[in-house]
Length: 63
Image 1: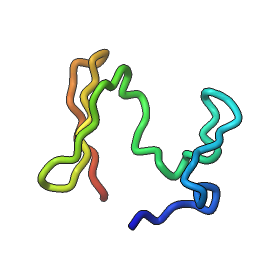
Image 2 (image 1 turned 180 degrees about the vertical axis):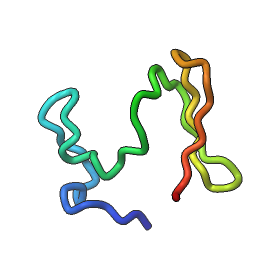
Image 3 (image 1 turned 120 degrees about the vertical axis):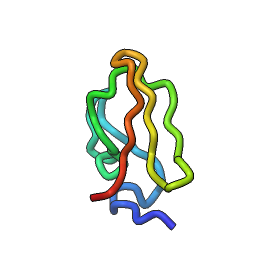
Image 4 (image 1 turned 90 degrees about the vertical axis):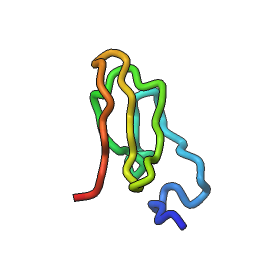
């Protein structure tokens, strides 16, 4: 069960413009990945982001 922000109770991120993250801010996992064609959840539960522009794979986890 996701703990969604009040703005996402309808499960739709109705942002006002292309780069406005008003309703999707709680979904943000990171920035500056560049072109990221793939995001996967690994067997350890961490997110893995592939970045074509940076030539890297990033692992995202809780602190």
